[in-house]
Amino acid sequence: MNEECLICSSPLEYLESAVEMECVLCHKKVMSKTRCVNGHYVCDECHTSGIDTVVSLCLNESSKNPIEIMDKMMSMPFCHFHGPEHHIMVGSALLTAYRNSGGEIDLAASLSEMFRRGKEVPGGICGFWGACGAGISSGIFVSIVTKSTPLGVENWGLSNQMTSRSLGKIGEVGGPRCCKRDSYLAIREAVDFVREKLGVEMEIGEVRCLRSSRNNQCIKERCPFHCEEVI
Image 1 (cartoon, rainbow, N blue to C red):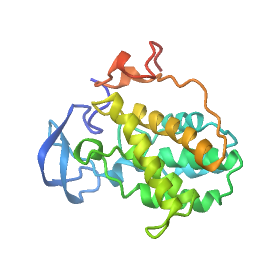
Image 2: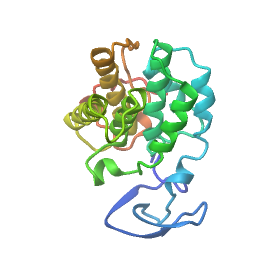
Image 3: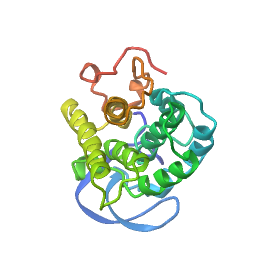
């Protein structure tokens, strides 16, 4: 088996109702629906441990291509194949490429806000809430760059439109979840959206997944990014 449980690599199981579970790493007790078949549970905070290294990467990055930036993040040691870290990484890659493409933002402050908001999006919500965290992350990105608030007008609308477009594309492809595929889909939609609505032209080329051999639930040819090469 490939990457599933972070402790024993066994498959994960998803319960119909949340039960109290204890994180095997920090021993915090929380209600959750997700654990491995051997009973191991790792909380979202422990699952994303090390993601702070993304800040340094982004602040020193010159690329205008958010997919290229995202791939660098995905190759960092903290990043697992699936997990809530992607809910932060998608928006962070977009913020960085947006700034490098001429978008007027304070990148350090924007990344800090992205981390704060992204960490509030729990793992597994793609199936439990019907709203993939990668898609939500693209909406958070737009809300940050447009300074949206609950009382906003145009920026409020743009933020929700962005999330809707990402989730629509993710839903069209269908499940089961793949955090890599869904991140690529959300970023690709965001590049088009920002060009159309905000006039900032980020770069994006051909997107190919080179990690499918690590995904037990890979949908193969049904994925728009699938190729035979693996890393």
